[in-house]
Length: 402
Ligand code: ATP
Ligand code: MG
Image (tube, rainbow, N blue to C red; front, side):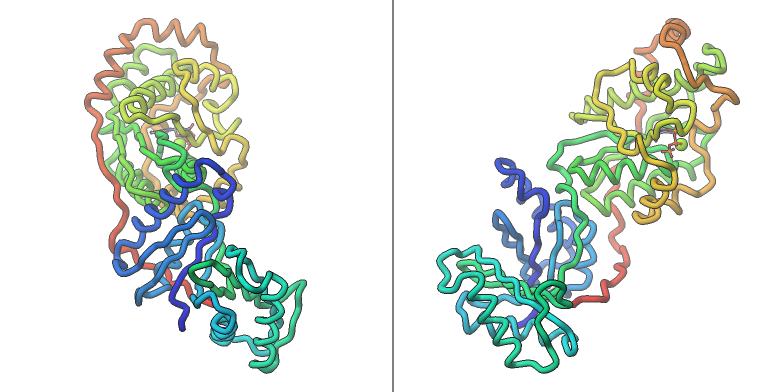
């Protein structure tokens, strides 16, 4: 007997009826993708739970990886026993005794997935609880607020005992929501927007607009590093780097200074939309937050958004900067975003961009461009990189196992 399994609870996806099969399948392949270095583990899936058999692999690094996989509500190290009452009692006692339990309070919470078991939930709680009390010292029952909740899941093929829940990342498995294209700038906001959309099941591709020689290779590296961070929460990510200098220079020449920002954004959105279409994405994701800068007023959004009818997801739209920064800190992108290298927009930003641009005006200014040709050129010269994430990632070992 040993703590040689991990029991995974699904959370929100278990309410998704018809799609459940796809959700479970995706979650299991996402987990397998993150634990490739541990080839001996075996995943068993059922409609309400998933079980990882460790087969001698170390639990700590696997637990650490599970914490950033979306679609997991909570999980626990588990002891597996036969579905037979004496075995279950012994398993529960072993599971409890592996913990520093003395002087603590506990309760038993049985869950009977196997309805034909000889004892019902109350009978199980009672039988196991008495067995634990008889065979330990300095342990008392507290049904309302126990220090230790001994959870016993009785299934037809086996029973699992857990004593401690580890909080999962929540959300939905990445990939169950289709593909989206994230516009990633190198600033603080867009990586957070990418993270939040992955949390709702979107599989990301990324587009970045790059204006050499006005922006340096280091600005590009910053975006690659941010994309790499995002792979910690999902599979590999395709990164499209669009050469944007020619368009920015053309805009500077043709469009009055207070409208260059509006025009720049419209071109970015048009190009992003073309790439999205090629990659069979279903939406574009940005890090916009209402009122934060001139391009993020409702009037600006109306004028910029005019170039496409594709859904644009703006996960940060109602968040304050401090809220966004808190998430950036938590997902460890803030430090990378704070590196000083400017992106293409900052460099060409006029001193007083219009906060209330008019559609008629911007359409007039842009009527002198061959928009199709400019967009086609940029798309044709786009560089594509696959970001896989660091192989030698050092795991911050999860210490509080039990
Ligand atoms: P961020 O912190 O993400 O840079 P921001 O507050 O600086 O956002 P803007 O510069 O107005 O705001 O950009 C708004 C959004 O437009 C960004 O969140 C991003 O989604 C997109 N964007 C801006 N610049 C670029 C770029 N160079 N490449 C790709 N997307 C960009
Ligand atoms: Mg920015």
